[in-house]
Length: 151
Image (cartoon, rainbow, N blue to C red; front, side, top):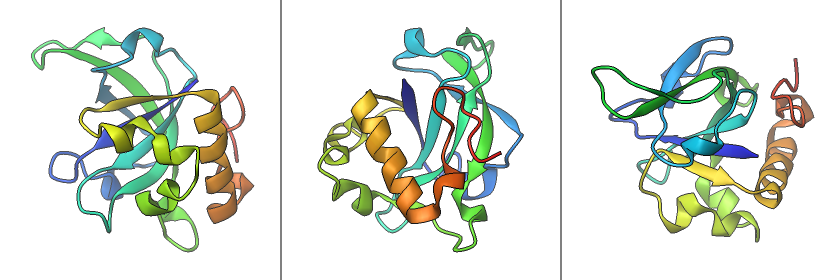
């Protein structure tokens, strides 16, 4: 199982925040009962179409979401593993490229883009990995089931 976590540039600009090895706490508003240590998280920047898309991936580094004191709601700790802007071509995976894939075109983030957390089924995860491998190379993929790929 894997997830897409969405940020909006006016609140959390992924172009400057994803640093491999750094841990961060993300809002866990939906699907938090399915979030466990080691699950892969893909990071999505919303906003204007030219910037919208995937910017990297990481893994959930906490056992489960916790209630956030002072902030309200639940949060989950993730560890950033790959920033696609570190690739030699310095590129993200644009949303319009993903929408051309017959499996990915129906992602929840396209159908109902509100919120922070989006669950991916196995077919969606497999299709997403295929796009990343094609665009950036296999070394930019998470390892199956471990979140450690390319390292």
